Length: 254
Image 1: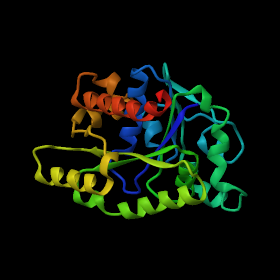
Image 2: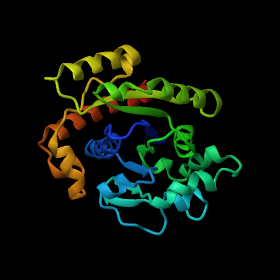
Image 3: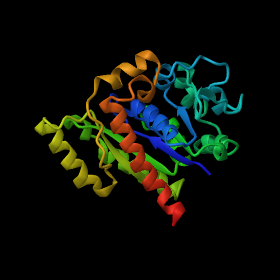
């Protein structure tokens, strides 16, 4: 049964979508099969991988009008595409019975087909994000190594704890990812130290360094391993994926 991981931060511009794409692609490079879920109405993940606007998106699936319909980006890497229509889903589903469990039910038929399912959550803590957390095993929190990125962390932890208490007992903060890191900047180093004090060992040892290739790859509709496999960005995300595999597969081996 595949691991379900939500990438969550209600602050935009922290590298959440970039991490979802390149963690998924990196896991594929390690021989795993991954499914990416674009749960953001802005559809940045869909656009970044050049997936077409198909008739059966995550919006139609959540409304019960279609099953989850994966689009294959490359061998081993599939995506459930998003659309701007998803922005109205929270209002449309507000009166649905069991509305927090819609995604969980949708995942049941496909979960065994993938080793990892990665959900790119919207930059909010509404019903869509609640659905993602309710069906996830782990939450990964990408954090830009800037002072303002630390604001609101208490709220994120509060939401995760409430979901764990009331809706999903197995939910854990599986990792915190430091993004856009520059070792030459004192502020970046200080923010990482603050992250470690707040989250402890859940902070990944691998830090995603600031790298132009990571910004260029979405414009070419490619992940970093296809666009620039020898770049710093590719090396960092590969190292991060190795850490993820160690963390998630150790309990299985035990």
